Length: 320
Image (cartoon, rainbow, N blue to C red):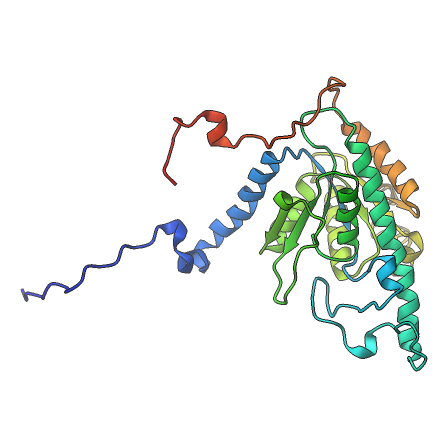
């Protein structure tokens, strides 16, 4: 047996497993990351006393009316901070040399901005109504994907009504950031699309689908499929907003006529073209979920206690 010399310096202390970034970012820890995107939001929702939500889907590229009437610039992609190519940008006010395409984009920007303002108004009406509901948990909290466009409009309307509002953002390869109207304690960032979609569906009692693109279509049909196949243990009210837009994009009547869906599947959703009509549909559906609470019972102002606070400092106490 050879006598190896003792190391001149002692080993550095190994990192704790939950502080080992190399491990946590590795394929071996994927399950931990997935579990974290379930448990961390769950803890925050409990802390903020969120019982259920109303989800708003829609394009990230629609601006507010005052922006669309001014020097509006389209984004390269949903959530992106990069701008679309100049040829795709709408004509700016006073630009007499703009191409026909740019002029059409400017006209469309004004039209689409109407949906932004409608989403903002509907979220305000809904939040203002829910603030008067009895109970010790927050009901039907306006939730969006956390980005710009229709998502911003929904969070903005709820913010302006003085309510809590949720943003379920997604980490993407290009730079993006959450809109400023999300309640800070309910501002989430997901790595996995499927975990983000889980939280869209898990708490939702209603869904409002505003005009949008690939992402909006994907999210809408995912929840419609869950409702169609009875995979959700609850009744969900689904409002498709902007009948002219959506009937031009997809022909749901044709799907039923050709037998691709059942005729009764068309009852899974209703169209609306004004915030007032959409709110009436939502209120009718959501009232079925309202509990019989004492009329004077209200949501406490302080956050709900976490596990340590609820059980006491001497219950399974740790120093970290």
